[in-house]
Image (cartoon, rainbow, N blue to C red):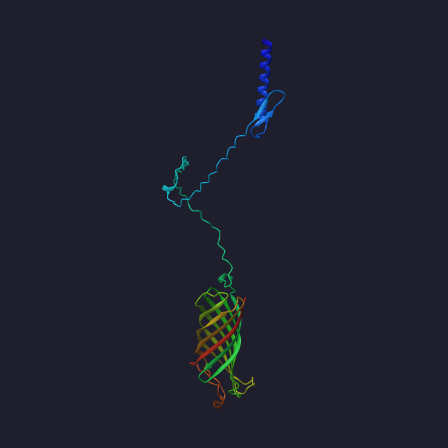
Length: 290
């Protein structure tokens, strides 16, 4: 009897285990009877409805346009501001200024200065002298030396003759040597127009020819005159320049022989050799500087 009860209990336990195992693995097909294994039966039940998916709620945030500090949310953990270290103020140290003794070299300039300028010049000149009783014209050479930016000394040699178109029978020939001082109103440079004042002495050897071309028949005398005036020099470059000047000549010495042995009726256009004679001389020149 005990063995029967034990066997029965064992069979029921196995059956219960089989039913639970089958229910866990059997599909949900509705209510009905389902045979399970060699022992017992099982009942198939409807599967419970699936759980609904979690609802997703989208919350649209509205941006607050308020920019005031009171509208901003407070930070839970505000940033720590590092304190700047105060710099120690140092006392100023006074030092003597450094003197630079390096010579300053002037930049090259197209205009140039006195140290860069050519001081010597040689010019071809044309002179025209006018007196109350006639005139003379001719040419010669002039040399000039600049011994400062404003001052120069000049020497000339010219030969002038009277107007042969006015009088073809009688002629006067002057050989002149002059020396003068020139003062430029502003320092002379390699380019530009420069005005100057002039003062000097003029020495003349005067020849009167009774007949044109008769060089063996003439009367000779000398005269000394002062020369005062001014002019301008146009520097085209450091090599070339043009000049124009006007001077007043006043005879202060010499021998007055008039027209010499010339017939007074043939002295038309021929100046005489009077000591108190005054004339005006106009000069043009082209100079080369070196």
